[in-house]
Image (tube, rainbow, N blue to C red; front, side):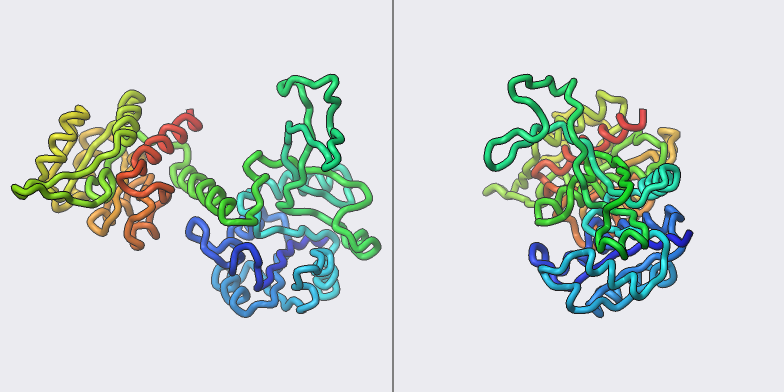
Length: 384
């Protein structure tokens, strides 16, 4: 059997301009699920069809040999055109036995999803397959009629079987079914269940922000492999503080710290994770804050932070892969480029944001460090 994957991409997006080629977690949106389709090795060929020269260029830049790009007619790119119209147009150009329609707006799709879905399709001799997530919500019509339960015998949520909600991540369809019915689903239908977070399709900016954080977390976990984070080293100005300096009448400098950041660092230490703070400046205000927090591993006036990072790793008898580093400016670049988990605040300089594994939602001095601490604790918990 000849298996192909197909992703239709059009130039105009009403909710988010240039959505399909906009960068999310460091890559164009379309690249995430396409890469997983390639990695899965489920398909003999993978295609993108588009009406946009810009999209064509970006796809070929990302996947110069693994993905083929076809032209898509204007008729299939209107706001009212169905996805099936694009699939039928594709079938007129390319011969196949089974096609997988892949949605760019579901970038959390993994290679294993394609593999397991294909296995189910073949094993159960299906004609079509959809992807879905489990939902234990109670659904009603607009006319206040219950859809999936009896309100007079309301089940406990723990005992409720619930429903499977189609998430639109991808579909499998036999060519014969598509040609005869002009539909992606029909005949003997199967369902591949995916993880809960894949219920999010990117339709607006809120969806975009949520999915981006999930992708960054996924990216960080992939970088760490099976390792846990054993130490957290961080910068001060622009990381623990908002980067501002406040001067009194006598010239004394003041800095603003966030109490939630302090609690996050304490939580790390309580969970056996070493904490070290470095600063290129020697500030009495910072020294006083470190003393207040009982952080003994504080190093002020450091000109070469990477040398300190190396010495601490050697002293602690751990690999740089076991260390998380958080910074915001060019003086942090060497450290960020070498550690297992590189993190920065939301307002770090662009050169840093492009190199880290995780960009916080919050800016420096406003809970970014706490966010990083919670992320570290969460990842370590998942790996136990």
